[in-house]
Length: 213
Image 1 (cartoon, one colour):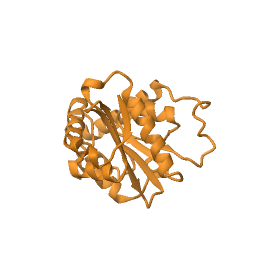
Image 2 (tube, helix red, strand yellow):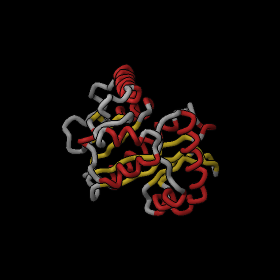
Image 3 (cartoon, helix red, strand yellow):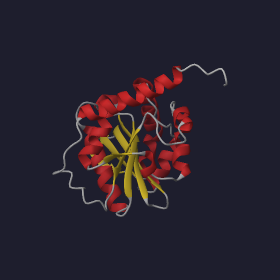
Image 4 (cartoon, helix red, strand yellow):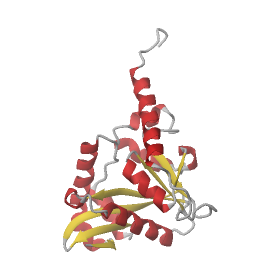
């Protein structure tokens, strides 16, 4: 198994990557923004992606997005093929793309929005902290990318202040980035956060309209 910086030669895997991401979204029942093969290929050609290969067989992928003129960076589309799950590959991919992001965009804040508890744990281990959406990029093109997510209506109803996703941020200029010494955020904290959000929006969806509506 090798994890490398993707380039143009890996464009043959673009369709498989998109199909794997879409299938994962359906299985989880959570929102994952869809991407077209052309978008994935563009990331590869610019050196803004990493890919995991078992010889010539696709195993996993993640790409980098830059927002607000390089002030913010996101590691997006993290996916592992079903045949390679449960062996810690996602963690290895996440570490490689994170280190690549820091090397390529040393002054950028690296952020993530996700509904996945596993991704939250990976982010926490790398030094990310949970934050409100107001601390993330205000680049509208980033939020427009959420339109293909099944929960986009929630984001709209809250004027982009919150959704079922949790925002997480790594600030290279923070004094609290020694994640080896810092207290890790426990599973129960993330689980509680997810339950609160899910309950909040479920109640909002089920609340009948008032007579004045």
